[in-house]
Image 1 (tube, rainbow, N blue to C red):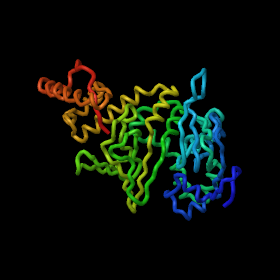
Image 2 (spheres, rainbow, N blue to C red):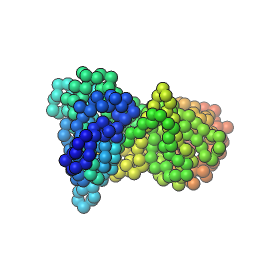
Image 3 (cartoon, helix red, strand yellow):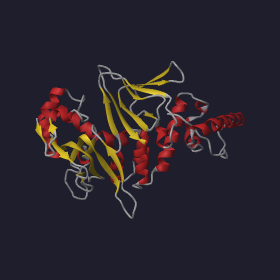
Image 4 (cartoon, rainbow, N blue to C red):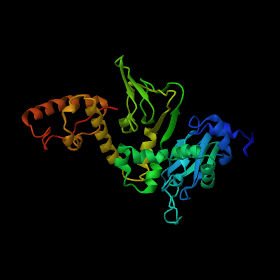
Length: 363
């Protein structure tokens, strides 16, 4: 234990527990890997990561906060930035297996997509490539766990169909910038409330591993258990404000497994869109509509279970996002129209001339 340059007391094993390593590896092993990490203090305005530098070091804020700069101030328009705190890896995309070329050609080395600057004074830890390689030789199992945690942000976008559908053709800089906005949470021992009914739904929740229990407070015994990797909850909250959340969402780890989630705040998603890094709002909206309608179909909600799989893409194109109050009236009318259409046509669920404008409210 000692003092960093700013005079803050530091204890590296303790601070590593403010990173995704906490719970992912045993406490005694956290102490063993300390020598591979460096701890550094920072003040407000200090550059922690510089955009365009080689992305060969992973960082994690352990106290204080930092800003991910999506767009610099320009022509009188203020800087667009997202604030992050502890427990999230930043940068280090070049450490992901296969993301940096072995030959080291300068035109292929992964670059940092954004700058990260200090917001509220604190400390961060960092793990550079050479230390990660030493860790691989010394403790291969721990290396594998840490590498997976560093890569989780990017693999979220490549492995989960919803995100892959939207981001698969994005330039690397836009891809890694968007990946940087997701925040990590893990639950290892006890059930813990993630989102509470009656509160505003202001973030997307992505189940990475383990179990979530979702209880509908409007229906006393209505509870769902979610275990599917990539399950999305509160997806449409990215696009508009819920007056309140009707679900209690509870992480339910057990002795055999942890529960891991990634979250994306609506405010951060909107800042990404406002920064004009890539034109993506419409693509996200269309993908969200299709995801929610397919979920409703699989649950046989409303009339959607009667839609044939071959018709789903065309069917989804007929809908758009609307506020909940308007949805109720639109969905009822649409149900009447579709039942009428079904009774008059056996070849297709909906005629191609069906009016646009249907809407929904769901997960």
